[in-house]
Every structure is written in C-alpha cells, then in structure tokens.
Amino acid sequence: MFTRRAITIFTTLIVSLVFATAAFALAATNTVPDTTAGDGSGAISGYTISNVTYALNASNPSNVDSVSFTIVPTTGVVKVQLNGSTWYNCTNTAGSVSCTTTGLTALAATSLRVVAAQ
Image 1 (cartoon, rainbow, N blue to C red):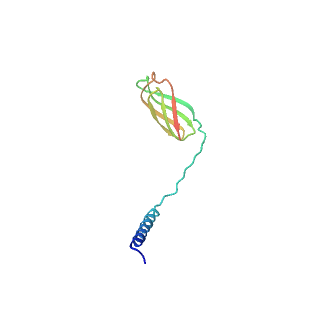
Image 2: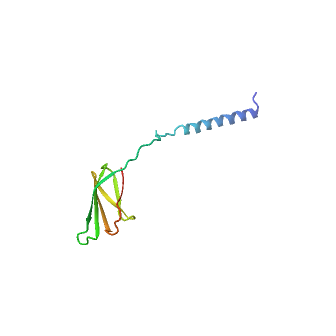
Image 3: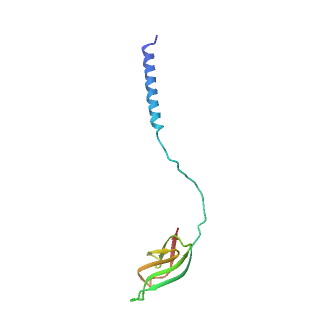
C-alpha cells in the first residue's frame, strides 16, 4: 500500500511536527513583565535665591569659609560656584542652604552661580 518513500516522508513530517511543537512550547513559557513608555513635556521653572550671606574666615578674612542663602522651592540638591571653576556642595534644609567653600579667597570669588534640581 504505502511505498517506502511515502513512509519516510510521513515519518520525517511527524518528527518535524514534534520538534516544532516542542520549540513552540519552550517559547510560550517566556514571561515578560508589564512596562510603560511614554512621551510628554512640562515646563522647567527656575528657583528664587534670596538672603545671600558670605562668612569670612575668622583668622584670615581674605578667605571665604561659606555662603548661605534661601532657596524657593525649598527641596532639591544645590551646588554653587563662586570662582568660575570649582563647584561646592551645599546642605539644603527646608530651603535654608549652606555651602562650605574651603580654600576660596575673597579675591577669587567673582560671581555666584547656583545650580539646583529637585
């Protein structure tokens, strides 16, 4: 009834279907968590700086020990630059900011640049 060639083709087809089903079953076990993506825009507003105060060194008043000021909005990370090159870290406590300026001379303090981010 069946020729040897037909049996070989039939067997090959069955084996191929078994492998295809196994491969599909393995691929179907992958789990990918839900994720989100989006695009949007929002305004970037600036901060308001007020009550700027410089503290001079007690033994050598030609050095600036720190600069303090008030910032609104009151939250976020704040850094200052007074000599155009060195950035100083600041402590922001509810909008009351204090920055230690170790090694800064009053002569080198030519401008106050404040960078803040929430």
